[in-house]
Length: 559
Ligand SMILES: *[C@@H]1O[C@H](CO)[C@@H](O)[C@H](O)[C@H]1NC(C)=O
Ligand SMILES: *[C@@H]1O[C@H](CO)[C@@H](O)[C@H](O)[C@H]1NC(C)=O
Ligand SMILES: *[C@@H]1O[C@H](CO)[C@@H](O)[C@H](O)[C@H]1NC(C)=O
Ligand SMILES: *[C@@H]1O[C@H](CO)[C@@H](O)[C@H](O)[C@H]1NC(C)=O
Ligand SMILES: *[C@@H]1O[C@H](CO)[C@@H](O)[C@H](O)[C@H]1NC(C)=O
Ligand SMILES: *[C@@H]1O[C@H](CO)[C@@H](O)[C@H](O)[C@H]1NC(C)=O
Image 1: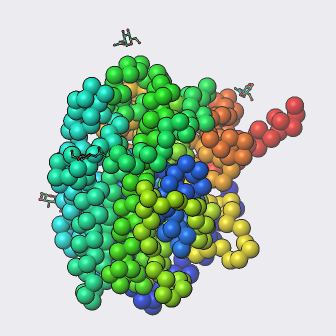
Image 2 (image 1 turned 90 degrees about the vertical axis):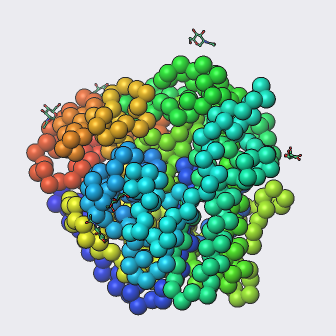
Image 3 (image 1 turned 180 degrees about the vertical axis):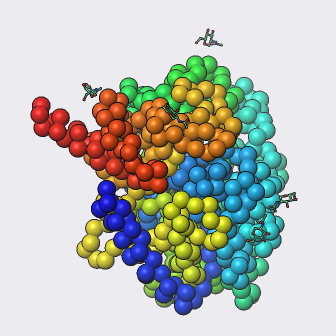
């Protein structure tokens, strides 16, 4: 065990010693773009279906992290975790019902840090999760120089806006619309783009650098999108997920019953039994079609923002970040939506672009109109295969923009002073050196109210949480333990194991063959039970994996 700990410690020291150079560099503006519920269904992530030319173009000039993971696959907790660079166990936000500054600790956010360094900071659309989780102000005035902007047409998102087969309006999942016929002739992401463009223009002649965060609402459901984007994905060319059935050995606690999808009127009409009934295949294809169309629609808004940088003369001194709060299951494992620890729910796109490397005179990001131009695949820029996490975004953006990187938080602490639970990931491995670092892990978690799927399993309120699924993703495996959790004390009971999952990446990239074995595990529990309390859960799980697989090797050897 000593060796494991030492290695980790050594890595931390190594990274820390490379930070100070950042402080001397010139400060850049930041355009921070977030999508909502976007998995890595993008051309630049190798998705053969997705048409995302504008994000691909950004990727072609930037650093593309192929293996980035969210800390919890639901909007509010993931966004607060990313923007404070603290894990959900430190923000203590697992639902939407508390404001970290009063509930947990008065942690500094990424935009707040930039603001404190003289930046003019602005929020457009969904950046923080609105509501209680950001004190009904999107954390203004701490994080932002001016109040956050929300597109007025978002009010209609939860109303009857989708024309059904009966010609009447419904609250549907599938909601391709004629934008001219929508109230105000617009949609939320169109309005957010316009506001962001207006704010960019207003900063052109200002001496202070800016941090503009733009949070798009798509491809989050409902798929209320301009109908023309559907034509990019003819239904007869859509396919189902490659693993559309619920895996045989999936623990019941791991399954998320996609309640928010079921609630929509068009899905209710399908009369699908709760929790395990499956969506008819033709409807699955339509959901996938609409999701991809929503991605292309959002990509077009990204393209409008990026092309404006050049037009406004901001391209040379503005860095761009593109990411999402978490992924979304599109029928994999018989599941839909987020709310799980699987890669499809936790893996996110993460792209950083820093100006400086382009040939002079070329327009940096010309808008690519996916509805009118044929789309070619564009080679990604620097592809980074390291496993990284959304808690890494704060230190990495700080470094790339030219600010000092926050120090590492003490190991298990609720330290309020500025610190990060992530790492600066801006450094690429030296030429020829592999990025497959065995020490790299991404750590995610998901709460549940019970061992079997309930109406509130997707998003339990804090008071109802009884089990926490902690999930360790390394190069070789995803290992998840569902452990007893006390929502009053926030204590995890490592002896109270409700279920386990172990998927080996090489044999089972889709995570369908759970090889976790309870009887093997009892033996390992005995071995790790004597570890001191101070040995954190990540380390504990790494050791357990080590023992688990060592056991597997010996039993295979015997056979
Ligand atoms: C939280 O920190 C901010 C500065 O980062 C400070 O202005 C504010 O008063 C603090 N609030 C509380 C409740 O401690
Ligand atoms: C949250 O909002 C309320 C009501 O606007 C305000 O009184 C309170 O001070 C805010 N909390 C913090 C920590 O700023
Ligand atoms: C969209 O609605 C407008 C106004 O009703 C109409 O003129 C137009 O033809 C519609 N477009 C399509 C493609 O249906
Ligand atoms: C819905 O399904 C249940 C059983 O699965 C069945 O009893 C009921 O008649 C169905 N309702 C409709 C409207 O099809
Ligand atoms: C932890 O779980 C074990 C096994 O279920 C149980 O015996 C023990 O009482 C629990 N400890 C606490 C503090 O709840
Ligand atoms: C679990 O492990 C035990 C003991 O090693 C073995 O007897 C049993 O067959 C295994 N079960 C499965 C499902 O692999």
